[in-house]
Image (cartoon, rainbow, N blue to C red; front, side, top):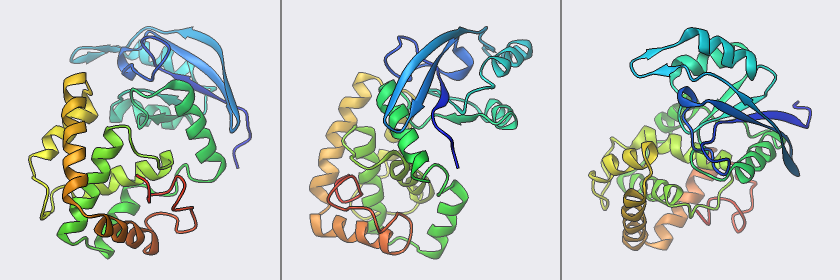
Amino acid sequence: MIEFPIKLAVASKEGLAISEHFGHAKQFRIYEAAPDCCRLLETREVAHYCLGRHSDQTAMTGILETIKDCHAVFVAKIGDGPTEKLKAIGVQAVSRYAYESIEDSLLDYVQGAAAGEESRMTKDRVAGWVLAHPLVPIHVDCAIAVMLKILDGKCKMRAAEKRVMELLYDEVKTQPGCLLNAALHPLIAQAREHPDDAVKNIIYEKRLLAETAISRPVMKGFKAMIRQEGLLDPALDEDGEGLNTP
């Protein structure tokens, strides 16, 4: 059980969005957060440890010491090595809110944690679910379409459900669909890595095309199936922030 409020560290270039890579951060904004509010406490300066192909381990030690009292650190991107080092000191690395509003992201995260959603579905659990419930080609298309909507900022699911859908997409993206072109995958990868304005415009166009190609009854059936089969919580309100309005 998490006791609130908790401290959260944020890597941000301009103080508005979660926009800085962990290894490039020269400071972390420290917030105190509870399910109903969050506030900025202070800014802590650090030496950035990523030096091109090399890393400054002394700087890494300093970063770990600087944010060790935080429950999690929010970044635009982070590698596996730093993630494991943070995990070892009890700090979770969170990159799923990359380039989104700081306060909205922190509140969404904390509300999910308070509801017990923080770690319900992991990559391994989603992979196991896919093995037990193979998707037919049209449902692969549906998973891609939801991913496009997440990237376009039009998904109304809770953050925990968005993360599950991202993991589902990662598991099925190599499988054949029947309506959507496989050329979407490099675009989606680019949008997740470097979401500049040009890429965002293309994602917007592809999202509209995907929604047009997949009929509403087919998408509704896909959503109902993944809830009934336990990928997402069937108890959530499908007319609210659940998958029914992605």
